[in-house]
Image (tube, rainbow, N blue to C red; front, top):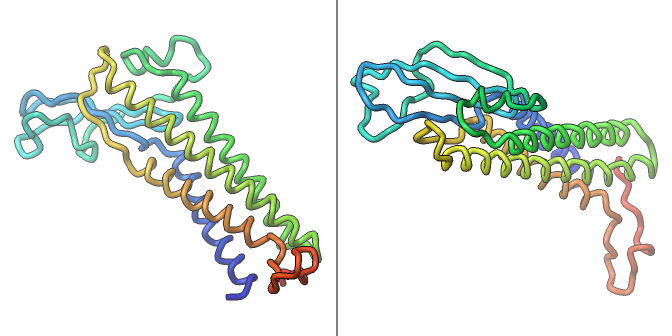
Length: 230
């Protein structure tokens, strides 16, 4: 396969990865929390949240949806939903929203790291645009920082995922929490897909931008003919 074709495929995969990560950052279905459903034909309050917002939903548990020993849900049941944005930088507000001792530092860290991921994606995109519009050696050179920026964006995505996972774990294990069970939702899955696509494709783009390896054992990389991207 020609090098130009490989780079086009890498750029397409990066676009998909950026779309997945951007979707994860702006949506609030990273995790779903539910208290224990005790009685049939009563309402209970489930919640789902992301990096910026918490949404609580009043659900009516009928005999068809009630399962002994399970939590309130599923969250897809019809009900009244009330969403509140996290006040990351306002002291004392998050505990009031969550109604238990929240791990505020976890949410601030996850949100901040996701912003770094978006910043690296923007820088990588600018390098790709410069590479596509440039000519000669400068065109090839910009692929290297682009690959590095996208790989860094993938790493930031992974760190944000792990911080969020630890946050949910600490909230569930807290003695003051009302939540009985949890699971990760589609926004979390989008972030996972974004991490894999951005990191691996960023590394692949970086390797594609490297000088051509020597064909003969007595050649060096400096002696090998440069391979230009058309």
